[in-house]
Image (cartoon, rainbow, N blue to C red; front, side, top):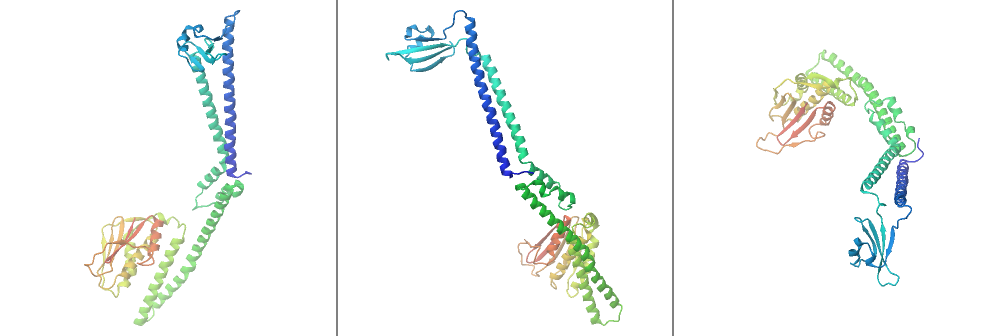
Amino acid sequence: MYRHSLRTRVAIAFALCVAVLSVAWGFAFFGSIKLTEDHVLQHQLQRASESYPSMPMNFRAYDEVGHLPESLREWAQSNPSEGLYEFEEIELHVAVVPTDNGQGQGFVVFDVAGIEAASSDDWWWLLFIASAVGALAALGFGLGTIVMRKAVAPVVQLASAVADIDPEQLTAEDHRRIEAKRFGDDEVGVLARTIEKTFERISAFVERERYFTSSASHELRTPITVITGALELLEQSDLSPNDVKALNRVKRATLDMKTTIEMFLCLARETDDGLYDEEFSVKPLVNKAIDQQRYLLSRKSLDVDIDELANPKVKGHPQAFFIAVNNLVRNAFEHTLNAQGSITIRITEHELLVTNQVNSDAHEQQTPTVASPSHGYGLGLGIVQRLCERNGWSFSLLADEKNVVARLSW
């Protein structure tokens, strides 16, 4: 449980990292200065002890160029400006200062022979400093990683909990995993509460869907079954031709209602006992759909050409496939006017094509366009689209001024 918000914890984490690194760098620089100072003093003391009992005079003052060491005279005759100069080859440091009377220049020479570190010592010191810098950098990286990991731990914990949840199969363990009280009252807690409420709504919706489909499957099919039984009894009676026509219309309407109910129940079910992985043949379902909708052609001079180029088998929900094909065949039969040519149904290895003509003028050519599945050629095409999406099939409708081609592929 955290008392501060995530933003505050991240800011505190950065502040702690900067503070600790600043202190570490400060001690490192202070230690380097003290080590350098001690190193110089030790060299001076060592040189003095080597010349005991006489003490070396490292600093010497000269008021004339002629009194300077021979190695400096040529340089001094060039009248250098006031300042500090270093001569590494002869290990001398020279300061040029004005004289007391202001009529010339004075020279202070500092002999650093034996005091400055050798080149090999310089490399060792450079290696030591580089090692210290690397160690501090590693310390800062490790410290920053630890602190930041602690700061964002609730976010990582929530992300891991959500990643392990299957939205299609929510369990009681999933709800316990994302309980908001585990994440405090900060921004992560607000996000956890929102996710928890969302999952609760999803669970409630799935439960309602299951209850509805189980109840509706019985309550809606029972009246259809009663009507179908009553119609079968009426068929056995002595009916007039007009009564037979009326009875056939009622039977077709009942069959359409049964198909519609099955279609909506198929879409409403979240799961359907593994029927979406069943393998079935296409041809019998296509023939069944044609036989069911052939009454629509009773008053039309139309032919139905079935072009069977293959006898494929499809993997998915057979009832959903029949509903989709039945809808496409019905639309083709309904929207093709009398004497507008034949309706072609072609079955290939990977697709089903239902083609019907909508214009008898064969000379008028238009550019084909993709029609919207939601309207224009039957309200059921949107449902066909959804059925195909649920089963991993694809559906398209190509329409122009002459033909409409419905393609269902798998």
